[in-house]
Length: 195
Length: 170
Image 1 (cartoon, rainbow over the protein chains, first blue to last red):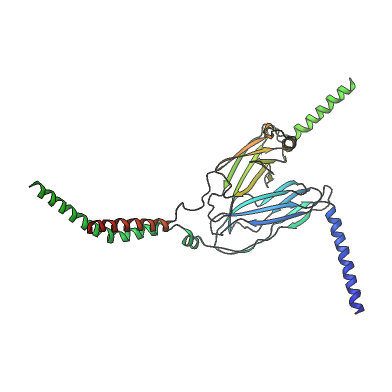
Image 2 (cartoon, helix red, strand yellow):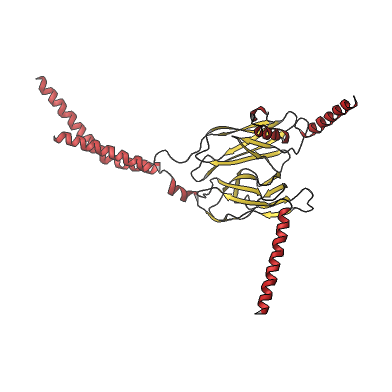
């Protein structure tokens, strides 16, 4: 029992020390939170996927030479439509956001794991080493094939046009018969009036 | 007299140090991409990449961009003097047409912030360059559902047929 209590105290002290250390670290220099988000309703093969990186500085001073690199979209599986996957921002002042947006298109359907991007930055002007950070991970996702997507969401104009053509005979033939007989009777009635 | 000289010298040095950092006769060649097909997206992304050319060969200038009242730093890309400005907007809020991305260097950007602080018109600060991003309009899906159109057509045909029949029988 005593031993347990001692352990507990030791743990508490350790935590306090760690917390203090963290506090000290937070007080000096910049601290960045980086999120990586995908702004898509559906993920479809060969259609745009918007990936947005948001950097927010919760530290007390500006982060310098912030470099975002994302190696998770390899060119074999993704076409890079616009925006570069490696970007540098000179300065992120405290309590401000900086965003970077990239548009890619998956070349293949199937499961894909959106992993995190790597971020390097200098926490203060005279920091001897660069701080390494990782962005959040959007996680596992499934890219639907374009065919499958089209089946669900396209307007099926061709299908409906085909349906219209198929129903046309059953409507047009009776109408044609009726119209010709009507025409005949009208002619007859006109003729009878003349006489 | 001496103080006047000093002032002159200081201003000269200031001008020199500024000219070393500023971009003279900036030329911008840009490419832009706007996600037009919003059927699978929740937001519209605007991205533009451009290279800045200065006649004085200035490099590594920090650039800031201002679009529709939003300001953001231009992100530097791997190539020299190549930048990217990108932002996202709600599909409903994004208007079609031209967006002018005004680019400022450090000085211009601080002048703008100062103007906003003092309640002056920020448009008085001349941008270094302007990049125009055209949004031809976001496609959010067909204007009318095809099955709805088919149902309406079927209803129309059957209505004319039945009304013609009842006219004949009357």
